[in-house]
Amino acid sequence: MVSHSSAHRDHLGPDRVLRVPRLIRLVAATVAMIPAAARAGEPGADKSTSATGTAYVPLLTNEEAWRFLPRAEQGSGQPLPSWARALARSLPRTTAAMLNLDRIHRAQSPLGPLLRGKMRWVAARANHCAYGMAYAEADLKRAGLDESGFRSLKGNPAAVPAAERAALDFAHQMTVDAAAVTDAEVANLIARYGESQVVAMVLLLAYANFQDRLLLALGVPIEPGGPLPPLEIRFDPEADPPPVPPRQPPKGRPVPKEPERIDDPFWLSMEFDDLQDQLNAQRSRSGRIRVPTWEDVLRVLPPEVPRPETPIRIRWSLVTLGYQPKLARAWSACTRAFGEEADQDRVFEESLFWIVTRTIHCFY
Image (cartoon, rainbow, N blue to C red):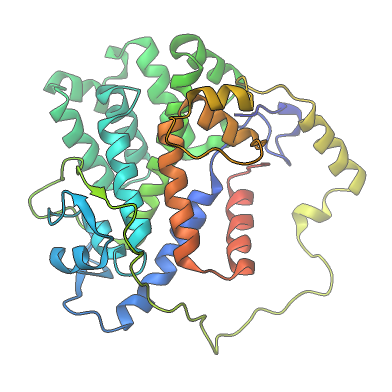
């Protein structure tokens, strides 16, 4: 996490916590691919209806979804969540990696089941995601949260202990406006929970906001029998990758006219020297959290993880791998599989990246 100066809030995103823009880029690109898979004439793909009654995407049956997923060594054939049935044909390996990531966050979170579930519920409520809220509530019930605890969570914050309230407030603010989270708020969390736990919170909220946007974009319903528990599935890492539908760029669509000169009021409001001053001010800022060295990361990586030939120098990677290697590796498996399966146009992908980072005021 990198801190910022409040003197530059209007431009480079001062006093802001780093989010992970690629999460939302993956959402947008994933959803864009689904109609192509649906048009491929897959058997049994029926329309699913969202909680609002609007059909968004085709869902495979459970049996069909399993046929498209990579071969499983453990847990094959069990009921899959709706979102996995929506994605399995178009992005089978990505879906498998996301099922694993979901299990790790829900069943093995270093935050513990109660705090993790509460933070996940707060994020889902802020995102107006009924599916995410239902799953968080189901997880909290399995963890033993009683009716009094639910009442405090939903409407009586004064009854929540100060440390937990700080974490839940952080979850809400990171969801509705991460750019407004301050250095002092992060310092307070670190004082109460420690750096490793705060990194786990950030990774949880990054995943929660990614998942909620995916769920809302797909419009998938909660499963007929209610939320599913975390799925114990092990996919065979040596299995041949399943085929994916051919990626065909849309043709015949109108292209917006390219301006001859920059006409964006945001950029026109700044002189080049002003931009450089702000960049230099950002570079001079101290981080909100200690960045582990590459040697620190090597000490915590499990022995079965291949070591890169050259040291990693990206600070965000050093932070996530150094403090929470299991969560970081599970997410990287999703983005890696997506990159290999999606075969996206780079201009399209980077354009999405730019729009997202600018929208959430992420200087990174």
